[in-house]
Amino acid sequence: MIIFEKVSKVYPNGVVGLQDIHLTIEDGEFVSIIGLSGAGKSTLLRAINRLVPITDGDIQINGTSITKANKKELRMIRRQLGLISQSFNLVKRSTVQKNVLSGRLGYYPTWKSILGLFTPEDYQHTKEALETVGLSDKLQTRSDELSGGQQQRVSIARALVQQAPIILADEPVASLDPITTQKVMEDLKKINQTMAKTVIVNLHSVPLARKFSTRVIALKAGQVVFDGTPEALTDEQ
Ligand code: ADP
Ligand code: ADP
Image (cartoon, rainbow, N blue to C red; front, side, top):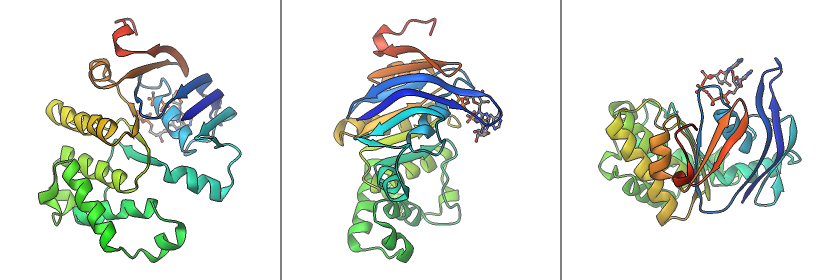
């Protein structure tokens, strides 16, 4: 469960990113965050893993406060949060397998990450995650030989092997064509339904939010202007 209590973010230059946000997100929800560019979607998503430090209020992830967390606690919190971004962030010259394996480092305590040695179990998780996103045949392919949509699905597989219960996807389909967009959204939906993961996704598109999520949160100028089911969302939002 994720709880936002009176959360605000004012950037150092005085720009308000978020203003007085109260939210509770339960385990297993599929939440779309919508709003125009600059509405605060990215700020909200990145506040959850403290990539953006908030300036007021608190966020709790399964009972742990992210504002009060020390280094070790923050690491434990981040292990529970798989991050997918618009730009995929793959190592381009590296194989699909190596890119996905690197997600395992987010699963282990730090000493293991430093060693970077992978076990047969790590390879098994990698194989299974690539099956989930339909890319089993690309194991040894170089990442930069894949299409944008395939690269995004590799980045989803990388988040999966971390075995985080919560997936944060920051505009994962912003750079993809309509057909690939559907595929990536379907992968996120599958992960939500079959693996019982909480998915929180930033989107520009209202139709996508309607089609895939169980809850839509609309932001405007850093404030929540709608929070409800896709069915309750009217065209003004
Ligand atoms: P969205 O993801 O909805 O496009 P953002 O969360 O990126 O919106 O931005 C919300 C507001 O905060 C915008 O006005 C944006 O310009 C501002 N903002 C975002 N990041 C920074 C930053 N690092 N420094 C200053 N202002 C920022
Ligand atoms: P997006 O549309 O994906 O949110 P942006 O182009 O708004 O991306 O932002 C790109 C980067 O610039 C982000 O890291 C964001 O935090 C930062 N940024 C956005 N707005 C501002 C701003 N007004 N001042 C400083 N940094 C900003």
